[in-house]
Length: 474
Image 1 (cartoon, rainbow, N blue to C red):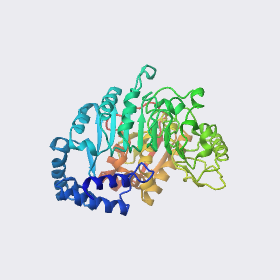
Image 2 (image 1 turned 90 degrees about the vertical axis):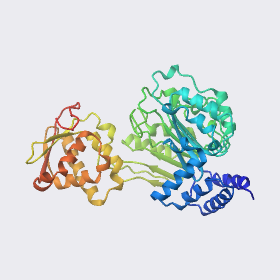
Image 3 (image 1 turned 180 degrees about the vertical axis):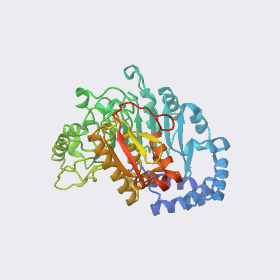
Image 4 (image 1 turned 90 degrees about the horizontal axis):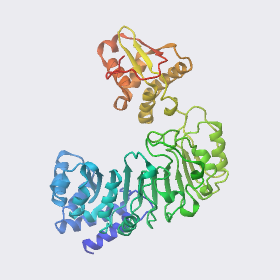
């Protein structure tokens, strides 16, 4: 078997599973990669040694240096040194932005063209159109992932979708495409790719066929849907809501992920706008064919009632995952499915504290008064809590118990042991949000404060707008 035949066999194995992600722990795939790498090396192709280095999993200065040399031999010094280019096992992923709009042309003109595996476009619609025009002129036998993330659109009613002929040509040129990610305003009319199995969408109107127009998604079995685009205005009208994710356009859908639809219009996971994911699910006709379901936090008894009503009409469900929980824990039931409901978080949802006044921290024995916003504390928790050691979790739990009392009694002051506060902040040091939290952590790290101060006094200020300086002080 020559290298070309081996590559075809590897391609079939790479995309054998009905999944958008390749598992390199698979022994059969690793053995085939090693055999393919041997053939490439015997042909003098630098990708052979690159593949072996990637399979080896050794990270050292010597290996990195050798890898850079091989990469330059394969795709040239310019592409090899471009930070928007990533490689693994002889395949290439690239981030295409407006600051480097010529990257697609450079890639397609190189030997790397045939071995593109993933492309992530970020910018204006014209960049997407130009990039797809170029991609659709040649075959891409390894391209399995394409992402489009459109910058903010001022008037989404005035935009023109990407040319449908270009989309059709792209579909013909990407025979193994598995995952499509779209975040934009009316970016496409439809995308009826026969091999596509996973779809991730920000914005119910990003692809018109999500609402039943045009052609559907014949093989999509996994849909991750956020109702809103990041920082978008407007919402989902009642008329539109009834048409989203019709069974006629998703005949193979098995798993629906609505977990990024926490209330709000900002960033993931707060992309639900004013539409309840649970009310939407309850009235969704396609739910009866689902085997997997992921949902956001259950905020109210009405949310729980809507979800339970939906579960009662989902006979094929195998697994429900409530990805986050706050406050009261609600009881759910299903005769056969596995229900995963996490322990409620000790902090409130971020969308409920964005307008909260700052908390004023005063360290005994020092003149410092630091203002900290509750929303910044929540952001820090979302990023770090699940990986914290137990003592740090306990410290943060105590902090949140104090914050809860202060939110219920504005203007009051409570004391918190500095040792506990310091433990909490140190444990999350790499992900502290906001100038206030970072300033407070910096003060606590000083020798004088750490050695002499026993208590910190925390007060709810009652102020509703930000008054922090760059350093986090008043």
